[in-house]
Image (cartoon, rainbow, N blue to C red; front, top):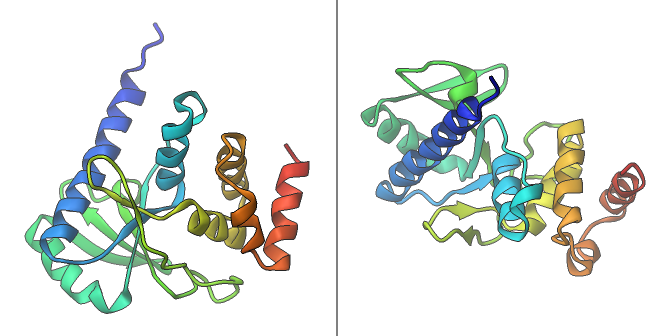
Length: 187
């Protein structure tokens, strides 16, 4: 029998993780924003819930100088900091799997040395629940910079509901604009 149990369980777990992270970071006065596929999901869901694709994990951006405080507070909350294969993450000590982790990237720094641009640090958008999200313009830059298959799909999702506006396009450098054109021709 086909059920939505697995999907619902995953959805609940990922949103619980975001709420826990929000509480932890807010209590520690650490500015953040949710980035990556989960931020895309939330922005797209607000425009058209049927076009939103749930992602596997949570990515968050903070300022690097806040990492020591985050590590300390996370430990108090039952999370462990880990740096594996070049990825900084917080892992729930009760479910120590990379898939259950919150992956961290750092504002105004390149995620990888070969990336064209650093993680943007525009003021975050806020959900009704108070969760801070990277604005669409920052997500577009990040997705065009990393440009993996899943990033191109996220760009298609954002574009399909009209979130990639002419204003956002005007702010893109030539190479990222060319990548956006390539994504649009591959739909």
